[in-house]
Length: 340
Picture (cartoon, rainbow, N blue to C red):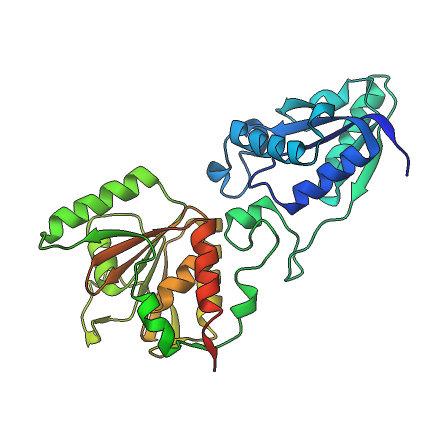
C-alpha cells in the first residue's frame, strides 16, 4: 500500500466510536504525519440533535486519548475545522485525504479548490463504512439518537419483533428506581411538581417522556412541553378520566397486556420518537392494557439526554436521565425477559 509523508483526516468525532478508530488507524497506517481536523459548531449546527454534540475540547480530548493509546500522538497535528476545506484547500505539503463514502463529495470539492489554487490534487483514500450488528452504518448521529452504542451494538432491533414476558425473578429488580427519585415523604403535590419543573428546566433534555396518566396530567397542567406521553386511563389499575385537552386524537393506540412488552410496543415508540425528532410535534401512545413496563422501552428507544419520568408506588416520581450507561442496563434487563 502506498505511503505518504503527510495526510489529513477530519470529522466531528462526537461520541467517539469504532468507526472513528478505523479511519484514524488508516490515516496513521499510510501517513508518516497526520493532520486531524475537528469540526466546530459552524460546520455541524444543522446535524440532528446538534445541541447535544459534545464540546470541541471534549471531542479533541477523546481523540487524543485514542492516539496516545495507539502510540500515534507524536505524529499528529490538530486543527479546527470551520468549513469543509480547512487547510487541505491550500496546504501544499499534504498528499492525501483519508475519507469515508459519506465525505467523498466534500473531498472532491477540496480537490477542485486545490486545482484552482494551482496545487496538486490530493489522493482520496476511502475506507469502508463500519456496520452495526443490525446492518446499519455506525454514526455519531445514531449514537445521539440512542439507537446504538459506540461499539456498534444495536439497542433496539434484537427486541423489535418479539413479545416479551416479565419473569418472576426480575420483579424485585424492577421495583428499584432506574433514576433520580422525587420522594413523596408526606410532601404536598405542589412542592414535588415545582421541584420536577425546575429539574427539567435546568436539564433542557432532548425529549421529555412521561409514563403514566398521573405524571402526564401533572406535567401537562404545569405547561411543561411534553415530547411523548404514554397513558392507559388507569391509576393503580383503576379507571380514571383525563383532561380532554391532554388526549391526542392522533395518538398511537396499541394493546399491551400486564407483565408484557408486546411486539408492537417498540415500533410504536420508534415511530413516535422519529416524528418528534424530525418535526417537533408532541406524541402520545395510548395503551389498551397496562403501561407498567413501558418505561423500560422508553429508555431503550429514546435519544441520549432525554428524561423519562414514571411513577413509583412507594417512592414517588422517578426521573431517568437517559445516557449510555442506563441504556446498557435496560438492554441487559430486557434480554432476561422470556420470549412469548
